[in-house]
Length: 618
Image: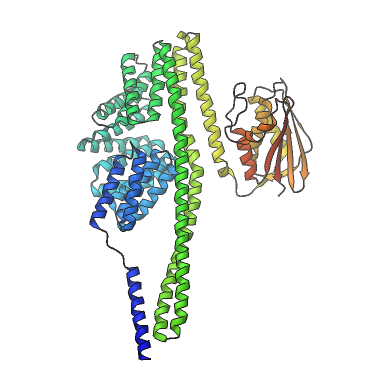
């Protein structure tokens, strides 16, 4: 009996040693922590010039830092991943990484890192035009940097607060922030920061209508930028100076052309496609001003190539970002499932041990009870982790929906510049252009309008889900359809168009979305009917538990093999003879799906098309 007791005590001792060893944490290794910091330094170095390399180094730093339990290394790596996603245009992804880094930095009281996190999170909210939230984070970043005497960081915090004030129409406060920022930058002689603030003062002067002062500020910004090695900053300043010279009607064509060509070369060396595109457009405008239409054609063709490359890059970056986030989420789910399985196995093992040790005495029973409690605590932690991961997953899917909206909004800025300067050229130089030059100018204006329409429809498509109200409303179809049809007939230049309706019912739905649905359907019906007074017929019937609407036109019709694909985004069957963005019917399908319904068509080429819309009869 005594030997049995000794054997069990030995087993108890070994179990206790195993538990202590399992719960002990290895101290971070000095050499490994130095390696983590080196990886992060390399990632920071490449964050703007070689973002794939930067991302790889940051991931290496995070993996090693997690192994040696070095939280600062993890936070720095996550922050750099956020900057990489920002460079790719994925602002939702950038915000996700910044917030993860912020959480860790708060836990370890990393003040310098917190200043960076607050500022970059503010940048994301500013880009999303959420100025109140941006101001909150900018102020927190400013206060930390002021305590740390981080002068260079404080320069940018003050400048960012000036940007917020300017967007909120508080010009006096914006000027105050910019002046404070410039004073600090000059005191520390940080040329890139001085150039940055001078550009902000130029923007402020332009908003106040003082174009001459704006040009002076940008010329000063250029002089400081050229003292740095930041090619992108120099190229941007050169372009702003040229634009303001043109706006101020300064005809210094050789100097303007020299600035624009330098900007193009610097942007190409920096790999900045957006700045290359704008430089090519400036060179085309300057060539038109001096009447060299051969050069206009050359730079216009170069502009189109760059614009197409920029759109393709944006699309590829968006796809890459989505794929990376999907892979990350799958890995997180797999790791969580593995941890949960391990917890279940641990629980089963402890249950078996409990049953055996209860037979050997109260002491061993208490030991196993303690072991069981540890396993239960792990399972509880696993359950909480799973709940948090599910919430994070839902937030990430919402971020993905937001991404296309943000991208569409940002792409409108260069399109507005193209249209504005093309209109300026037409107004000031249109009468001296020959027929060929006027055709080129019309092509530029038409392309800008088309791109603006495309971005508008894309933004509408991505924003549909946000327009869904919490509850549906009863909608009288007849007045709704009459109002929408009249508006479309006027916009299409066919005021004599006729709408024929049978007896319609009151249905339930979201009024704003259904108005958009019928706008798109009536727009197509009128566009593709070449008659001077086209006729559109709407009929209704109740099919089971669904309302079915039939919208019949007498247009060109659609071949059978194309009748499904036209509901896909960017699908246009006749791009030569009819204008359009290729998004309208995709918008229709999305609206119907949001109502839990379906849409399809029947069509005969040359005889017209009938669109069927079925919505639930709630």
